[in-house]
Image (cartoon, rainbow, N blue to C red; front, side, top):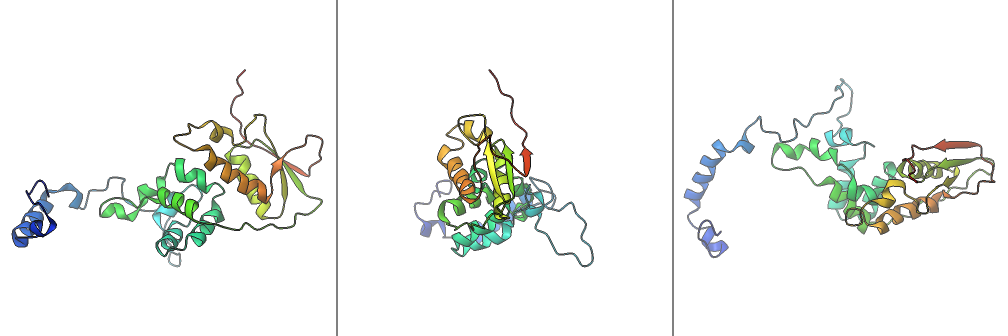
Amino acid sequence: MASRGASSLKELAQDRGPHLERAAAEALEELRYKKAYFPFGLPKVESKLEAFDCVIAPCMEQCAVCQEVPEYAWLIARGEYDRALEVILHRNPLPGVTGYVCTHLCQTRCTRNNYDEPVLIRDLKRFATEHGQVQMPNPEPPASRSVAIIGSGPAGLAAAYFLGLNGIRSTIFEAREMPGGMLAIAPHFRLPPEVVQSDIDRITGLSGHPGDPKSSFSAGYLTRTRPVWP
């Protein structure tokens, strides 16, 4: 409005014909309207499309855990935040954390890149986590099966989460005072500690809990741990 010297929307809307002609002329030169302009490359999947294959959204294939992005984005648009969070938790045990620090490579394959800018998929995940509520299942664990998990970083927490969903009790061992691994030492302005703790509480409430070294286990899982400095 300022560049055109208009003081109101009504004034800006006057003389629509010349404005439309100017916009059309600018579009002929603007790079974003050219077919070859893709800021993140072509939004295509790496897999081949077989004759009877289903179409996969490019953002899903680019995601490290293949989250159902179109499904939870659609649910958020309908205001069904609980169901959106449920869809996210189907594959992602740390929705709060990844709503803040995920590398969101999915956005580089968003088909909106063909038109303007990608959908802010990571922000949608964060929104669903902050506004949705999900009652986690509590399957009865077999008395004879338990797993020891060494390390409470993302890998250990994810292992405890999916073991718990399958009814297998796990015990998490952590050398540091705070669980979470690298998540626990992230700068608070980048990843609030209460967000990390919320994801941890959801997982430990499902299956995992702090360990007793004297217990016996039917299996063990050793995560990659960061170096321990003196």
